[in-house]
Length: 180
Image (cartoon, rainbow, N blue to C red; front, side, top):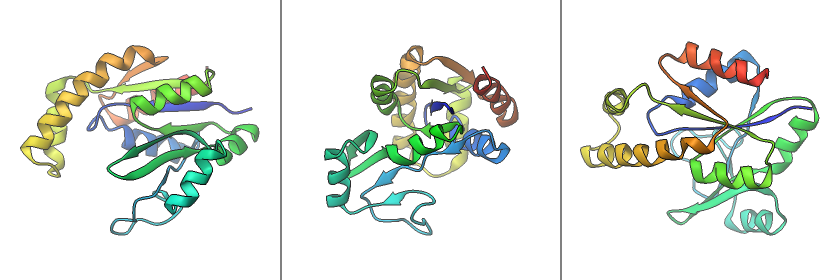
C-alpha cells in the first residue's frame, strides 16, 4: 500500500522544482490537478492539468470525486481521487502539490496523509527568489511575501517542515520522510 503525501509552501520556495526532482527519482507519482480554466500557452491536457468543462467538474463534485477542490477567479481547481486511490492501492506513493487550504481539506478526509511544508531558508532569500523569477510586479511580490508569512504560520499544521536550501538537500530529506 502506498502513501499520500501533501507538499505545500509559499510561492518561491522551490516546491515545484523539489517535487519534480522526487518524481524524477521515481519515489512517487504526481497527482495532476483538474481545472475548468482554459489551457495557457503550451499546456497539455493530462500533463500540466486535466482540463474539464464546468459541468463535468461539478458532476465530479457531486459524486465526491475530489479529495479537495476550490473555486478561484471563476474557475474550479481540484485533486481527483480516482487516480490517487488506484496508485496508492498499487503500492505507489502519491504527491499532491497544493496550497495550505487544500491540505487542510485533504487531511480532514484522509487523516493518514503525510503533510510536508517546504520552508524558505529565510524571508530575505524568498524575496530574492521571487525577484529572480522576473515574472511579477513589485505589488505582486509584496502580496506573495505577505501571503508567505501567513502560510509559514500554518506550517505547524504539517507533519514535517523541510527547509529548501538546495533542491538536492531538500529532496533527500523528503525522500527520507517517504521511507519512514
